[in-house]
Image 1 (cartoon, helix red, strand yellow):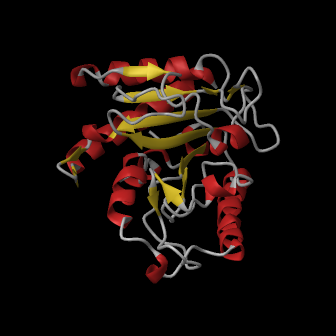
Image 2 (cartoon, helix red, strand yellow):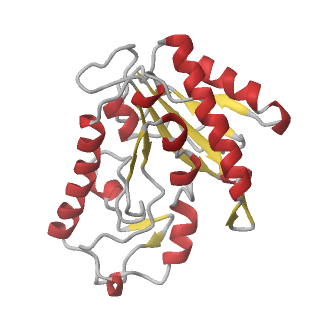
Length: 260
């Protein structure tokens, strides 16, 4: 399947990491770590969207948990990029929160991740995430779908009309190719629904609605896949992950052949 188009794909995985950054001592962490991890890590997305053996593409995975560093938030919003609390729970023990200097060191890791994306040779980015049924976006809209695709976002940090991260045709063609290959799964695939009101720094920084590269920006689609499709009783279903990643990679390759 690899061709001159698909091997220029870059897959960005920002929320699969489980590591704690070295700036933070484990003794500083609150006793809520398991709960925070369960609710905030995009479990196994580094495997689900790993197409390197199928497309010959590049993949960038942020190794640290978004509980500590969220690279999909604007680095200037320190409380979102390096949070002290999440979901109403403290990340750190009271009085042991990281200093401003420690948080600024963690922001450097955030910026390096984005430099890596910007410096990669690429013609298309898939921004890969997972969701869970009932999770709410910034507008309070619940995720009720199996696969959510986006090429547009409109948050408080975006321009009044929002931003488009791919030219017309990319989102529609990719969705059609997925629907055709997933017809036996009886899944609900939606476009620009949940999460469009949530600011994503990857979309805002690296995507645009032109077909060629412009100042390191290329067409970009965000994909949220419901974990219920490939995680059963908290355990990854290897067979399903393998089947889904092959379907995703085939849909990307076909989309690029049709559009580029």
